[in-house]
Length: 95
Image (tube, rainbow, N blue to C red):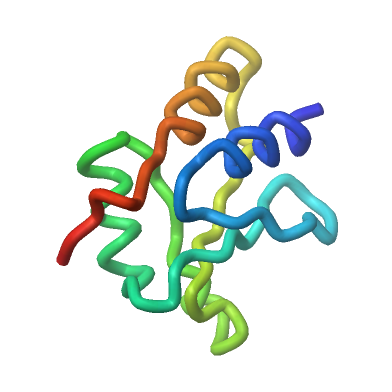
């Protein structure tokens, strides 16, 4: 259920692309190729209060991805967090 909620939120966000989870409670989410993932991670925490980790922190295959964890939230925090994630709109992102 948590994974489905996160997938639905990512699918609603403008500029992020869900990648199927290979296990666990996290996903590497595709980001636009023209946006540095470290800059984007800072932007998401500043504008949306969403903490994430740049995917290339886990190796070159993670480039242009962000790692989202959705397993650590308790049930009371999960819905508001997914609502915030679904509201992400990268069309107004600028360096």
